[in-house]
Image (tube, rainbow, N blue to C red; front, side):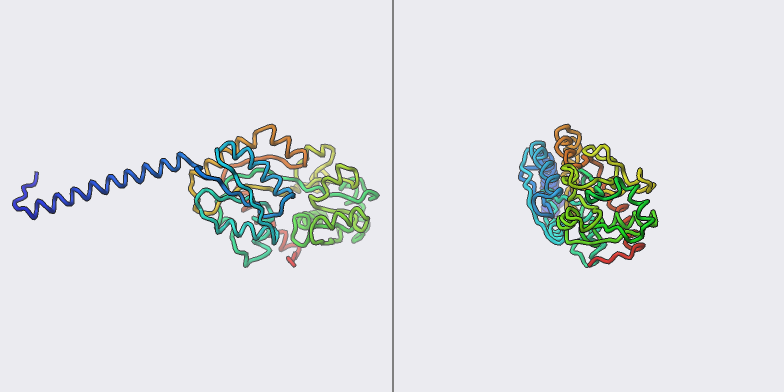
Length: 335
């Protein structure tokens, strides 16, 4: 034990001891507070941005999850629609939101993978500005034909297109849309010449298909028209769809190896607490396994799914690479 020979030395030692004790106590208190805050997450409503207007598939999927998620975490999940610029406005706002675990966004193939390629000056970079939580659903795009089309499925149409280059006109929601990318992949993999007719959205393209002004359409807007018998379902771009069990996939129609779907997932701004991401991810996994949710979404042709953070990250990377290759090989311009 040290022998302090004067009052000054004793005072210095005592002060150092006191400061050390205070610092240790403060650190312990802060640590306990931090752990307590994590254990109590969430303790206020969570905002979920939908970067598209109400009523579309993005909104439907988001709200289908929001209700059970609210119950699971014991706090409201408040859905906010912030549409515009093909999802770029809402996702851009989500990227700038506080990374506190109380802000989420639902992203899809268009907003997460296509937009950054279409616009190099975009206000966000998906994997730089966000942490993926989990995928939540996917959808195969239905390739439809006008009711009096001489082909009854995609295989027949491709055979006819080979004999009649440039005869068939295919509508999509616009340059660089999922439908356009799917068409270019089919053309590239089969060598057929099908004329691309871009529209400003799926609704006007569907109207022209119903009016017989185009021969086929690749867009999700046609799903209900298939169910009501107004158009023909020729094929689906991904796996078989439960709501359309008799419609073959593109791969089954002679385009071996073809697989292209839209997907949705939840993300939080980069640097959001890992505990919040883990909690939401855990609850999403449980919700995705529920029969009620599956019945609700699969009736509309949507497949419910979930994933780990890593799997969702890899999906975004692979999808972006795939789209980049299609864009370059087909010379697609986004205008």
